Length: 240
Image (cartoon, rainbow, N blue to C red):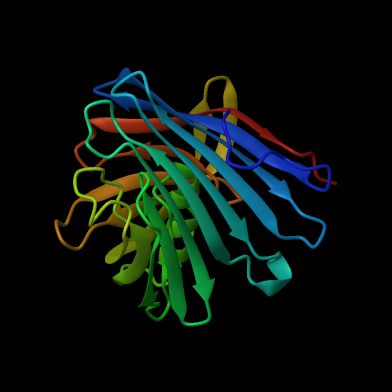
């Protein structure tokens, strides 16, 4: 697994895993490796290696900082290093997204250009959600607090096609509802999972997402059932 910053001696392992993507039940060749570590103050550091190099040469490294549980476990900073597909005019993007009160402060660098700084106002009851299945679990759990209601999601545009748009901050709406609790088999391991339906109000398409008790996404299925992702190599620090 690649990362922006190595794990330090002060961090304690919490969990790790790998998402494998499928299209029409065949592996796509892409994966998302991730890990979660806890800092001495109870905050969490989340690392994601979203690897599409076998498909088109692209990959995205994401790191997120979540506040301690006593302070709400809010995602307050996200760092991204994105490497474009082989044929793209853009080669790389470095971006930082930081919550500063009611604003999201964004720094963005395209290739060797000067760093651009912008800020956007954070909408009420928003979910900050980088484009990753790991963060999608926290997003769905947040959306379901207001079942079926359109809720703002703050993210970025994961595109390399246009320098003015590449990884710029964006706000869109999603909704989610809890459907049922069921046993989900991943390999030979049975998990007690909460199943949710997440709907994009722009299209009406509803994807299905399974979460464990820690809001970790266990499995994803697209609205058309053509795309799936399954968590593998899931490991957690023992509790109790």
